[in-house]
Amino acid sequence: MEYARLGRTELEVSRLGFGTAPLGELFGAVDEFAAIAVVHEALDLGISFFDTAAYYGNAEERLGEGTGGPSRPGRARHQDGTLWGQ
Image (tube, rainbow, N blue to C red; front, side, top):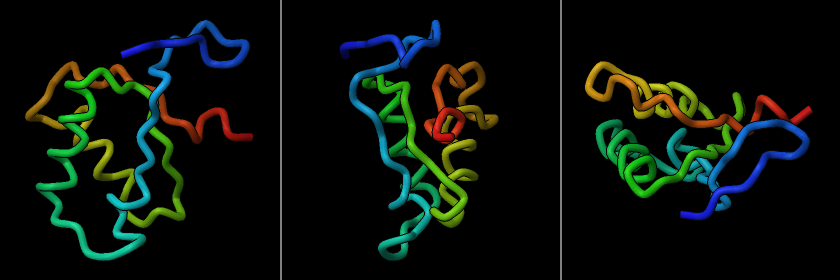
């Protein structure tokens, strides 16, 4: 995975981002366990930039479970795109 500095910050994020709209069932039903498993796989592949928003239904909750839930302590090394979307 390639990484780059995020804008003018000191943050290094993956060049490949993960859009979370499907996790929030914006396009149709998604099983909760499958949604969290996809986030786990993205992290395992080195993805550290996630694009999410309140508009995406429960995507933020599922992303939170997948990145830092009890089954994956210490996995919260990611950046949420909405933090810098202003």
